[in-house]
Length: 231
Image (cartoon, rainbow, N blue to C red; front, side):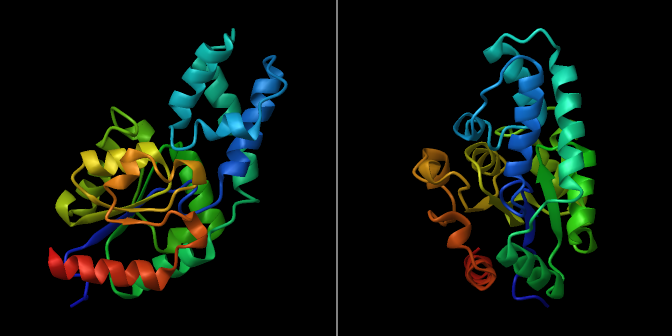
């Protein structure tokens, strides 16, 4: 039997497993430029890290007073993003090692993301992670995106796991809040360094304030083992 007992692990995708934010920024920048917002900056993009693509499009429409519908903005951004995602998405090396380590232990794993089902599938296939992560849930498949717990609860349901046995890996404030709301433990690996002190991260079982630079597969695995023993 695995040292991890009944533990199941649910990964956020963007900014946690893969460094896809540069692709999201570029896709969003091109879409907004086409709709009369020529100077969308990386700092502005960081405000939307962890927010689903659906909700981001709706926020753009409102905040920039755009004539296009949120659905049009979403479709254009998704199309541009998919073109980039298929060819230029980098997996964080220690995250790949962690996934492979959990796979050797037979730990149930899933992806739960604010991205579209098409984007999730493209990234998992393009990076080879689909060999390990066969269960994936998009926020588009549940009533509410993060910070609501719906996407994580649906992932647990598909894995046949109790929420209390699930550990979520997250890089963003809304995701950490969603994990807490789902009654799941959380390993927080903040993508935006300036958000590491956010109260939503304070409740994480393991908070790596330095983000991916601090994350190691062995360190996360050892924490899971200790956490499983004490639960």
